[in-house]
Amino acid sequence: MNASELYRRLSEPFPSADVEWRVTKVHQRSGLAVPYITSRAIQTRLDHVVGPFCWRTRYIPWHQYIPKPSRGENPEADRTPVASQLCGLSIYDEEKREWIEKIDGAENTDFESIKGGISDSFKRAAVLWGIGRYLYLFDAKWATLDERKRIANPAELTRYYADKLQKLGLCTAQNSNNAPNCYLVNGLTPAPMDSYPNAVWVDLTTPDGHILKAFSYGTNPGLAGGISLKTASIVQRNSANGSYYELTDYQAA
Image (cartoon, rainbow, N blue to C red; front, side, top):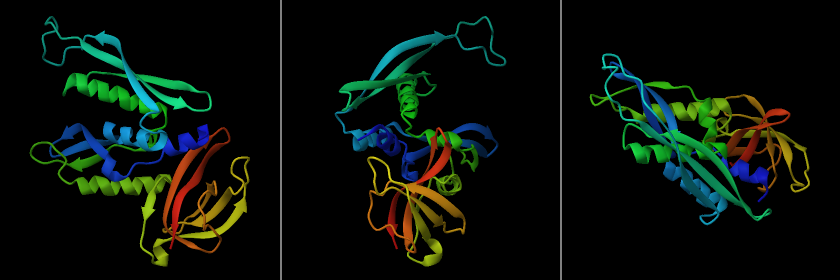
């Protein structure tokens, strides 16, 4: 697997079942929620893409700091230092026959401080590999809270997640076979590459009527002008020449 293919597979959007929401601000019965990917989902992604024996982590003590006193707190009172750690996430490069490591860190958290800090540093290191980085494009979402300040209607945030993916061109759409709910392939423009002679640019009409051009490596058969796709995974990529869309997977209607 070359570097481009590795990054493409690592950076795929996650299904909503792997996305959880953290409430960062509370106002009466509403909370400002932000999405994040669980450590377990990241581990599964790494297992599926590079294999369970081709990635590893290590944790390094980082720094400590004394938190500032909150409002009303005695500024002279002793406060417990907050520790932190760096996580090095390495993936084995078969071509170079060496481990490639990327490192990021996080402070310990308020809840399950050491475990939370380790988990956060792992997630940050995973972002350096492209895993879950698309979530930085999401705005925080106000959601209804229950009496315990927990999210009262998770389905509301699931819908928001799906809608936001569509607007960003990152969604994995799963629609019925009815033509109005399908992607229509208007035409193909060959764009052969050294390792991908069947690569093409695909002109699409999305289910909501927008025109979209997406790149395909041509590794999946059955793509042709005039057909409809009942499912399509479309991901936004960045390159030296700017951003573009890639059709990473599909199923003909």
